Image (spheres, rainbow, N blue to C red):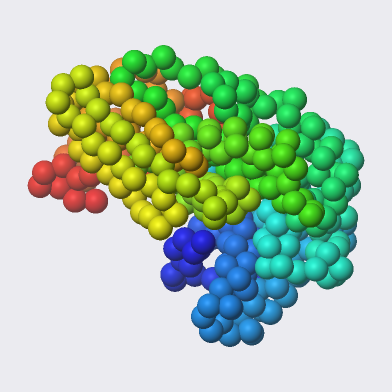
Length: 384
């Protein structure tokens, strides 16, 4: 799998301590500093894995590894700095254990041996966190995969048993979600896809089930099939998911599942799609065209269609319907107050120039909001 566009232009991860993050330049750098650990680990892994296909200057890899090593604390955890404004990037969890698990996974996927000093110390950090318990379900999903990559089967199995107790099992599928999640809205015209964090943590659990030596057991593959079923349902018609980050992990997990279950000797399958009228279409799926996307437009919408499959193997079928529906009015998660300074523009000067004061506060149910942009536009014949 190729890495996404993850190389921001115009800035670099700082080599020196950042200024205080309360005002000005320091506040601007705070989100970038928080992102640097994850971004550097991801780019390092992508570069290292791409060496077999394209030329990558070894100095870049070693410099990135040295930068990460400089962020490692004495207890093996990686130092977290700054604040991530987009909570989808961090899975809704913001602590050093989660960051350390993410970086450790990237290092092990390069792959670096468990005897490497940075990896060894990082695993010590993760083992300590796992023994203390009380970790978020997202964090435990990352810990389980990190231990699976490190070959620590006992810790892998213990975390999988813990995660299984919190699994959501419905309609023949399995997934994980954040604690305290509100029930899904019952909308007859729309089936909402899962949030980014849930796709990501479920994908990490799938990778954990498929990462074991010498090979996954039949029980592991049976559970993996139910997890893959749920992940497939969250995929949009363009092949992606909610965000870049969960798309990368989900596609990696589905690819690993395909490798683990692929049988070259499998036969062909025929998918027949027909309506209650005269429409009928067939798709042939075999070893030669198994990666080919086949599609057909439905002639009548709304309409009643049925589908049948004959033959051997697994076939993934998805329907895509696009339409516009006005959303129902709901409670606004923000309070906005706008007034002029001075509030009354009676004076001659105030009629020519005045200040606009904007006060915005988050009133939603989360501890903090996600990214927010306030767009201030000029009135006609005026300027800021």
